[in-house]
Image (tube, rainbow, N blue to C red; front, side):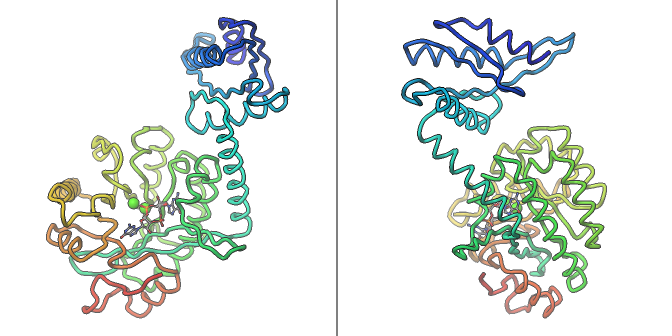
Length: 387
Ligand code: C2E
Ligand code: CA
Ligand code: CA
């Protein structure tokens, strides 16, 4: 019924000159319009977008329709039908990536973007198949005691050809635009839990490993099923694991994500709100959710020494977290002045290059084994290792 409704809209749309609409298959339609001005084409695209992104009545149900539109123009974007269709399809792909209701016109830059995305996706698939992802860990310290109380798993990609190590910023966004992020997050979770289970016997009882996951995984039941399975397989006590989510997920208010957060808490796994303060920072959800930890975004730490405003904001976040019974961890501590400020403000914990870079697993293993999680007084807070 929805497809029929769409077909009717496509047929009824005002004709610049002549419009032919056909269904290509599935939920994809092609519209060919004949006209001699680009402005008319843009106007048609915008009209279609308005008509197709609205509510429709289907058998008494109020249904939200959504459509993305990609456009290519003859002759500048192709001199034959197949090239025009292919380029319109590339533009469509970009429109989809930008959000539900985009309208994008083809340009050569899009082709580059499109090719790059496809090439990168193929690379990520290979990396998953060939086990090219690995984890480094950034230690986290309790400020009152200087004890190492946990570590955050950060994914890295070893390119076998060059041996170069790629940082997440260079591939996580690509993975997030496709569904590959679901696989990446699962692989990371498996690896992290396996390692965390090995560390559990040689670390203090409150040593917790943190793992990042994308909003997409939080809306995917398979991630939770995987979590339950991995905990079972590795024997990792759930209390030794904390998942880091970002504000975006809570703001979208997606039912499936919120349900999963509750389920995660119910099985005893901790939840941290990552990058706090960097996004919308609506406080409503702080009351609604059972979080364990707030992580103060590192943008507040950079230049903290010289900025009274940033100091006030950090103090404010610490007070907020304390009053809500959440532990608060400051990220991105790069110097002693920042650390001293956090200690004076009674911030619970911190991580950052000043204390330790993210380090390889075996280095952290050695540390835990040698000190059973306790730092020597002389190098309280500092691992003195760089990766
Ligand atoms: P994040 O979760 O905020 O992770 C902390 C990032 O800050 C890490 O970058 C870390 O190396 C960096 N960092 C730590 N201390 C300092 C410091 O003192 N100064 C500065 N300037 N930076 C510091 P990294 O490893 O490049 O990760 C970047 C982002 O990639 C992460 O930000 C997280 O959002 C994402 N990410 C990392 N691993 C995963 C993963 O396994 N799954 C998913 N979905 N995302 C991940
Ligand atoms: Ca994080
Ligand atoms: Ca963060």
